[in-house]
Image (cartoon, rainbow, N blue to C red; front, top):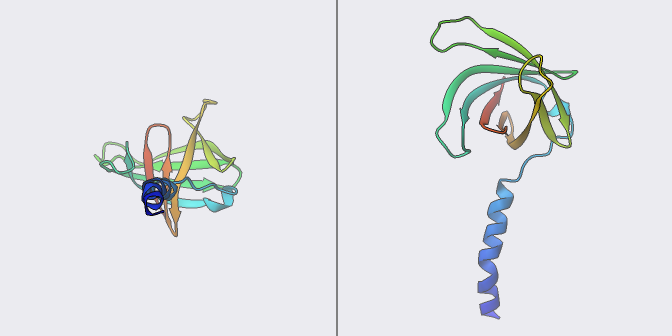
Amino acid sequence: MIKKILAILPVTAIFFTLSVHADVMLKDESEILGKWKVTAEAAKLDGEKKKVIVEWEFQPGGVLQTIATDAGGRTNEMHIPVKYSVENGIIKKQVSPGREKFEDCKVVEKTGSEMILKCPFLYFFLTKL
């Protein structure tokens, strides 16, 4: 009996470890509407975070207004509107304005005013404003 319990423990530990990082399924756009400050981006969830000066405003009707500021001060703010939608629990975001190519961004974690998104190549760390 004890051998069976000891054999099950590693499998149970793996299950709980994987479930901790399960994606958050959004019900609809109401869960993300408003302004968010993108505080950092990273190639891996636990990797080195690069600070950025970007705000995202998820507006009703599927417009994501991006406001980016050049940290070097070479350019002023850039306002870039792209389309987005929430489908099957994930955010489908236009890759660039004028192109009909979309990328899937999954909410990895959402607690209080903090949210982490996993897009195809980067993780984005956001704080609700």
